[in-house]
Amino acid sequence: MPRGRDVLGADGSCYRPRIRRPTGGPSGTMRSAMPEFETLGYEEVDGVAWVTLNRPDVLNSFNTTMQRELRTVWRWLRRHDAVRVVVLTGAGDKAFCTGIDRSEALADGPRAGRAGSPEVTPESVASDVVSIGSGTTPFMFDDPGDNLGPKSNDFWKPVIAAVNGIACGGAFYMLGEVDFIIAAEHATFFDPHLTFNMAASFEPLQMTGRMPFGDLVRLTLLGSEERMSSQRALQIGLVTEVVPADELRERAGWAAGVIAKAHPVAVQGTLRALWAGRELSRSQALGLGWAFVGLGNDPEALAEGQARFASGARVEWRLR
Image (tube, rainbow, N blue to C red):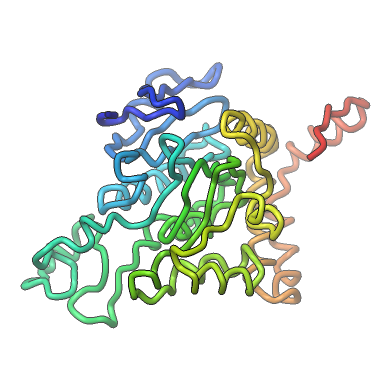
C-alpha cells in the first residue's frame, strides 16, 4: 500500500512522484517551499503540476486531511509561478474520487467544529482545522466544497481533470470547478445521496453548468441505481474526450502542455472571461470583457505573439 507521498499507479505499483525543476530555474527554492502532503501526490514537470488524490484504499474519498491539503495546494499554487496548468486525477484505476469518507463523517461522538460539539472556543475558530458539516447551529455551515475546488480557493490557473474510474457524490465539488474533463473509457458518474436517504444539494448544483438539466436530474434522482458511462458523458458535454485508460495521462498531459506554452496572464484573463460567461448573464459578462482584455494582454507577450505570426511558423495541430 502507498505510504505518505507514494502514489498508486494504474498498474498497481507504488511510486513517489518527483519534481523536475524547469531549466534555468532557481535550485533549492521549489522543494523547500512546497508543502508536505499525506493524502495527495504531487508531481511537477515543465510548467504542469499533477495533483493526485491519493487514498486508493478508500477509492480516493476525502477526509478532513485531504480537504485541508487540497485547500493548501490550491492556495500555494496561486503564488507558485513555475506552474501554469494543473492536472487533477486519482490514484489507481478504480476511482477518481467517491466523495466524502463516510467512515470519518459518521464517526461516533461529537468533534470540534461539528454540530453537537460540546465546546467551540475562539482558539478553535481561529485554528486552521477544516471541519465537516455545520457548527453549533445549522445556519453556520462549513461545506466541504469550500476547501476542495480550485475556484472556491480563488485559483485561476487552468485545471484539467483526468477521470480514471468512479466519480460520484462529493467528487462533483471538484469536477464542477475544473475547466474541462478528460475521461478514461471505464469512468462512470453518479450521485449516491438519495440511495441512502440524504438530500443532494451542493454536489448537483456544482454540475448545473456541466450537463443538460434533464440528465443532471436523472443522475441525481436515480442515485446509485444507475451510472452514467463515459460515452454518455461525452455525448452530453460533461467530458471533452474519452480515451483508453493507458492513454489518459498522455492526453491530459498533452493538453496541459499546450496551455502551459501560452502566456499565463493571457490564459488566466481568458479563463476569467469564460467563467464570467458561464456564471453571469450574457450582457453582464460582455460588460466585463474590456477588463479581462485590458488585464490579460501583456505588451511584451503581445509583441512576441505578433512576431511569431509574422515569421510564418505554424503549429502542428491535432484533430479531436
